[in-house]
Length: 272
Length: 317
Image 1: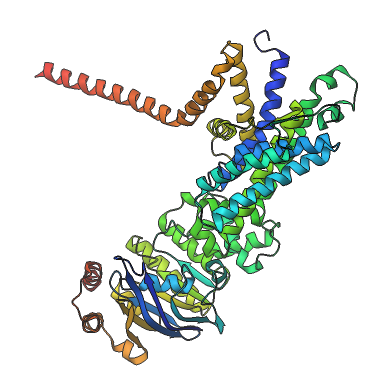
Image 2: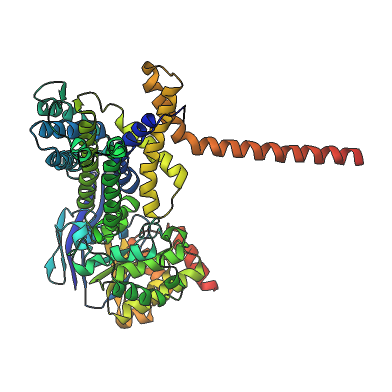
């Protein structure tokens, strides 16, 4: 489904702030693969997502999605088949527009932007209502309210719906539950799991939670200094514990863990 | 009625309706798209220059569409600078505004003013439809009301279409728009072309209304339109879309009444610009002033209560 070959990206080349954010990263995802990505801050996880989504064009290498070379395609064109969620729940939605209006903007992907002068139809409203009811948040009865009135968790759930209202070929989740309280985060994660498995969406998810990294999906990647340093799946992954993952992290990265968030989240999970 | 004669009221309403088109233009660019488009002044005269030229040539109705088309061109250039050449929005507007000065002179045949003499305007054509005294007095207002009402309805309809929703989303959350596979460059371009066509329309209407186009008449137009927009927002708040659209026009008419009253109070014409600027500043600062007054009142009453409490405690002890 997704084929990334040797992509590299250097920010501010030739200046004192030069940063090689991605170094010859290669990654192949099969149809329906759900891979989690862990790594310390600045390891290149978000940069990898930005490269795939087209926020910038990579310096070297190629990105092929479903047989189509999208290396030089513009961000909004890739968005037709790539869904994306950010850590900040405020980013994925337009606060002054209603739930219904937000969904219909996201639904433009389905029409391929034909019929720009048409309005939201009854049929689409029914579809939105049906999909909203699957969230079990009561949003289906608040469709004409501005999104700014919703809580962070509700907004993130809505963003998830918007990203998948037209089934994407690839879904990028960038720590999309990190800013939510634990109960809401669980709810959004469960929703994510249900939607992704039900429609067999190929998915990449960044997380700082080592338990999640092993529990969600069928494959775990680890990044460090712009490289993928660990890639486990199948039997090897089933046997893996959080401690193993941390050990692998230390060994592969060749440095001790400098990320408090990882240690903290891991500690909390073990206590739980 | 002694203070405000029907004549003054009529002028205020007519001007308010015409400048309401500029306010609606800023409603699209400033409120909806969240873009500060400072090319308004030049675009307004462009509309007047093109409109008056075409009217002099004998096509007053065609002039309306020509004025709007000129506005679209101006808006396209501003949008092109912003979206394709990455010029910041304020700079793009200023650059286009400066360039338009020369363009406007060229449209007017390198003269600083143009006058409509002897040819029909849309207003004189509309007035000649009926002979009654009422019609003779109010036909201009009726025509302007019809044009502005049509404009309001069009904007309302447009903003509920998928393209309109995309434009609203562009001003509200750019990441959401990109994630929804919409090209922000496209929606900004459409939005600015649309908004500037309203400015061009206003210029064309004022040209035909006053039968003249003058190179400096647009100076400060963006401030006046902004004031109208904010007066409308202050009164009508963030209500439903139709209320906000109509509120913008009402704000523009109210602004003209404030000016009319100022003139009536014998404020000298030399002070006119200063009066305008003060009104704009007050209108824009109103929320901050209101909050400050509320805070002061609350602080004073709470502090007084605290003092009284302390004193009461001391006498008890």
